[in-house]
Image 1 (spheres, rainbow, N blue to C red):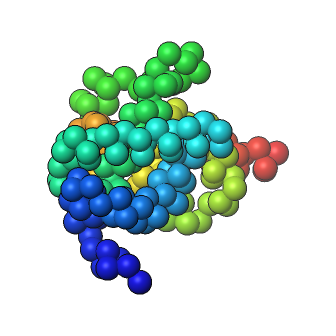
Image 2: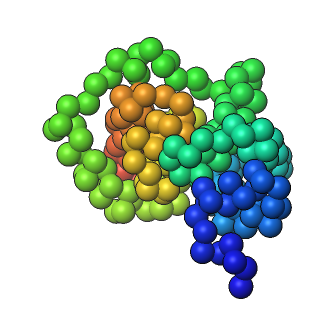
Length: 196
């Protein structure tokens, strides 16, 4: 067993900064499956996911070697942030990219009673047919798909989601609100379709 196995990701980053490549190998091993799953959800294309995955780790290597990595938050969240930026940058010129209006969403404020709806939303995800739900989620705009994935599948806090997506917590909450409203409408429409 490697002497590095018991070290935290942050400690491994420090070792890699000093030129110990085995530390980065372990970082890659620890984070590759989780990161690739996240990228696949964003891209919905295995070839594109592989490209983004490679580019993410190349950028991570450059940032770490240039001492640009800061230990604020989880290493995995930092990697997801890099991947997120790569995907968003590549889709900005794509006419199919449904860009969310940041100004409008940033103005959406959640109060305490809206936060308690999260329990109901989590229950909705447990009860709904998983394949139907995955199909419906894929119909949402990309920012809403991403918030659903990060919150319910990755189980990240809204603070972590805001860091990964480079938005405010209010924007993350607003996206969640719109995503769940849209999903509820689609689920209701599906139920009506089945009833007819």
